[in-house]
Image (cartoon, rainbow, N blue to C red):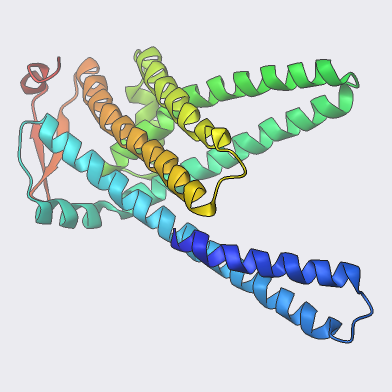
Amino acid sequence: MSNYFFIKPLIADMVKLSMVLVTDPTSPQIGNLLIRMKEDIRAIVGGEWISALVSVVSSLFFATSTIIASAVIHGGKNLSVKELLLSTIRSLKRPFHTWFYTALFGLGYNFFVLANLLSTVLTVQHPVASKALCIVLVVLASVLYAYLAVVWILAFVISVLEEKSGIEALGKAAELVKGMQLHGFLLNLLYTISGSVLVQGIRLIPLKQSSAFHVIIGLLVINSHRLVWMFCLMAFTVFYHQCKKTHEEEVELRVSFEYSKIPTTLLIENIP
């Protein structure tokens, strides 16, 4: 909300200045107008960078705490709020490292898909055929992304619960998910569909409604999407335990800031 209310007046001011420049390019105030536009652009870019940084740090912090709390509860143990916060802070470096690699992979995948879409639009001249082919490519790319992201999300969980991060966590996730790819894919596909349905709810907002109405609906959709993501992390934490059980490996849980290994047989009774 702070980002929205900070950016909105700056964008409105830029639109007003651009209209003045277009309607009267010979105005003696042209230099001052350009300076004001430059200041607005600088403020918008700086504000967006700060907002993105706060968003990434807070998202990683709460995602890490969600995974730790889910793992501890799944193991039948308790953890105080203070211990949870301290444990999250101590573990934050590894998830950030893993998130950086998965973000790069996701960015590269998106550029690959966009390049194929662009080549399709330029190659197929018929508008209907081009649009239909682009829709098919987007659907296939989304399904493939949901399949690939299983390893990425599981690697994030591993980086929280184990002393692994980055490429090492990705390699460990690829090993654990063997034989459980379909379960993880269906789990991630359910999250993807649920999140997409919530985000598409923004398009149902009438354009003539007030700004306050748009803010309320936007916050409702965004927070609902974050809630679905929280449940996805909880589900992948349980999925991590099941993958460990399938490979007959011991599960490591961080309790009171130390790692304690729990035999897999103790977890079987807790899994429905």
